[in-house]
Length: 181
Ligand code: PRP
Ligand code: MN
Ligand code: MG
Image (tube, rainbow, N blue to C red):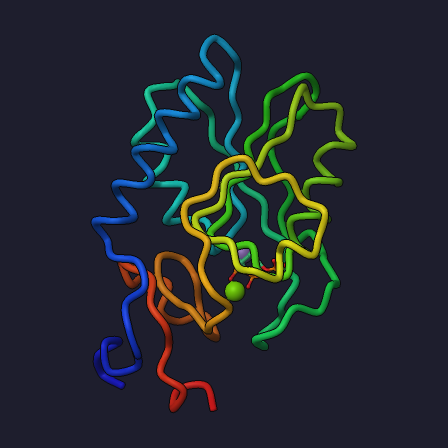
């Protein structure tokens, strides 16, 4: 389609709702990490939007670092196989780490990642995600900051892709079935 709008079914979370929720989460994070050294770890590529917007709502002088892992390949379902494509630059020893994600779907990426980062001797590891989907409840994961709990639909936008597209939608919506069928 020439226009991304042609490929969407409905909007689930508007740009305004995202911004308002991020402001609330940032206030919580500012309070929780006051006086502490905070490192935000964004998971490429989906977390780029939430990292950029959350970081700008913070008053805390947090640092940002990035990791790239692969779990999905080009398909639409999680394989459970996680591989580091780009590791962090920062040493996590004694640091307060906040993993920033766009979505927790099966929870496989995050449970692996949280375990991996915890093995590096950090002071703490917590998780902030824009979206959590219901499957994630089946994995033992402690997610401290959650933007929105959404149903198990095929969603795109605000970092979430389908075959690498639609990440640049400023809102979160469902993809029309004709696109992925
Ligand atoms: C997506 C998403 C999360 C992960 C969630 O990333 O951004 O990182 O999958 O899925 P899970 O809870 O089922 O593991 P993806 O691997 O598609 O890479 P991307 O961020 O580059 O899109
Ligand atoms: Mn991702
Ligand atoms: Mg993806």
